[in-house]
Amino acid sequence: MSKKNPNALRALLPLATRDYRLLFAAVGIEVFGTGMWTIVMVFQVLALNDSPLALSAVATGMSLGLFAFAILGGVVADRFSKRRIIITVQGCTALVMAAVATLSLTGTIELWHVGVASFAMGAGSAFFYPAYSAYLPQVLPPEQLLAANGLEGALRPSMGQGLGPALGGVIVGAFFPAIGAVIVAASYAIAFIIVLFLSQREETNETASATDRTNVWDDLKAGIRYVAGTRWLLWTLIFGSSLALIIQGPIEVLLPFLTRDRFEDAEATFGILLAAFGIGGAVGSLVVSSLKLPRRYLTFMILCWGGGTLPLVLLGMADSLPLMLASLFVVGAATGAGVVIWGTLLQRLVPLNMIGRVASLDFFVSIAFMPVSIAIAGPLSLLVPVEVIFIVAGIIPPVLALLALAAGRMRIVELQHPLDI
Image (cartoon, rainbow, N blue to C red; front, side, top):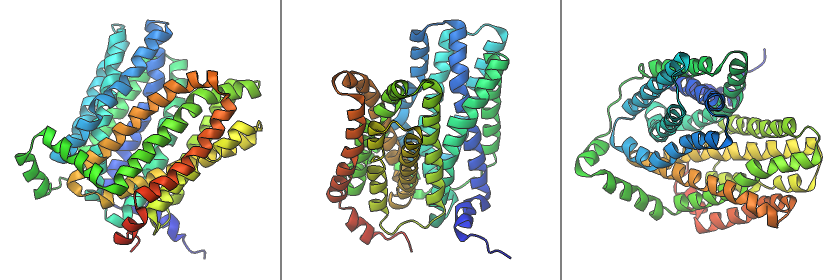
């Protein structure tokens, strides 16, 4: 009889906890709904106003919602019950999507309705994820947080970038956008019902008393002071935001030009390349979650992010599709592995009453630099060959990783706070 793989069992241990199973199911359904909404939104806008300008304006709504409430979401998560925030966000989003579906079915929907719905979904995410990050350590023991973050890291690309958009395209193509909107609303309603069954947990006295003594602005300043005064945290955020600035634009904006110049079926090739990146992220997340947290956890995480960009050099130099697919798979796997460890460190090294604010600051910095990277990639390609941009984008992050390791004194933190025991 073959023995069970202990690594595989370690990755699945969080699912033995009832509340985590509920959270995992709710997040999966919500991510699926969000992925489907990206397709429904596009075709609903095109049905109302067949204009790229209209589609761009509505699509920007979700990013604006995220950006507007990213920091406030963390403050709220640290001041109030995480369970209630999760339930409230899911319920409000379900109501918004139900209203959109009703308007679409009755033929009374207008462009601004779709824009408001996208903004609401972005705002909901800004409140949901800091609360989720801060709630998870209350649900699971510390040694299972790595596995939980790995499971979530695999769930998001498979549901949000895979099944959701794919099924959305099939349904909208076979029927019309209103049917897709109904399914999105139903998915959020199901997620809302699931989180209602989460166990009620007492909030810490520390959090409750802090809520009585301080206001929102004081809490925000305290979060910023904590990040600025915690060297490893500050330099990880600096490095992470620099990484987003360097690689996001080339992958999202310039990769289509590489595929157009090198391959006949550019559209399909671009989709396959992005799929390789997403699959790599899911695989990297699962692999890390099945292992113990590395003893040199900060070093491993920073080197994953920094060294993981080196295959971008091959994208600039090679015109072989298998090699490009392999390169993006490795980049995605290294990125996913680093993100899983990062989420786990926030939940294990940051004080419980500060996790929401730190998570939201990380969220804010990330989404602030992504559009900047996308905006400058196009104009930069007019001055520098696209191939050279990919080569530089692959080489610079490893250098910055070494700088972050030294400036953040990561080795000292790893010695002072061993997490592999």
